[in-house]
Each structure stands twice: as structure tokens, then as C-alpha cells.
Amino acid sequence: MIQAIKHGKTKIEKKEDTLSSSFFGLLFYMPKEIINQFFIEITKNNEIGEYLNHEFWSHWNSIGTKNKYYVEPDIFVRFEKIDIIIDTYKERITIDKYSYVANLDEVKEND
Image 1 (cartoon, rainbow, N blue to C red):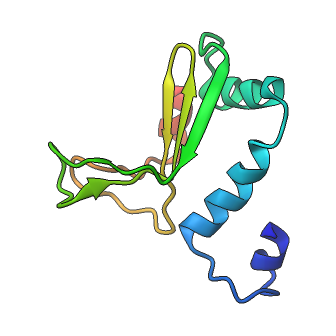
Image 2: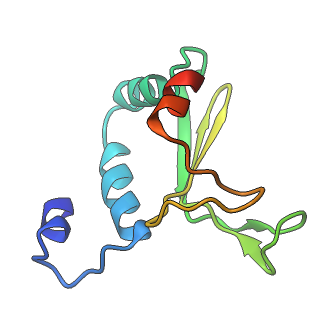
């Protein structure tokens, strides 16, 4: 599916939701050990605990946010010790108090 989208062989638009669900949807078919190892690698945190569950596009209360009705992260992943929220964006822009486009040196510095 991802390759078909990438090469324009499908009528599905290249939207963030399509791309994140294609990648993470396949990941969550893997055994729990592989899911755990994937998130240990990307978070560089060995203390996340065991993978418990995930949910795509859950609706959360919007109190304390700029959203009028609800907050909808792309993916919410629960582990024994931490929760991970994944939200993907097509454009990389800085929005005050919301997002920041870091350069590669800044990312390495925070590693």
C-alpha cells in the first residue's frame, strides 16, 4: 500500500492519516516483542515496559487546548510505564506553543 501511494498507483491521497496508518497499522500486526523493540529504539528508552495496546484517532476532551470540540492524535500507544502519542504532519512548520521545526544538529543534541 505504501509503495502504491508513493508511486501514484492508487487514488488515495498522500495525506498524513493514510501514511501513518499504513506504516503503524502494519507494525501493530507484528509480535509484541518487535513492537516493544521498535519503540525502545525510536525513544532510546529501555524502561518503557511491555506494549499493552494502541488506538488510532481516539477523541479526547479539548479542555486546555485551542481545539473547539476534541483532540485527535493519530495514534495513542500504551506501554506499562509510558504512553506515546504520535501525530504526523505533511508540512514542517513552527507554531508557537505547539510545534517546533528543529534542525538535525538540535535533534542530535537532544539525543
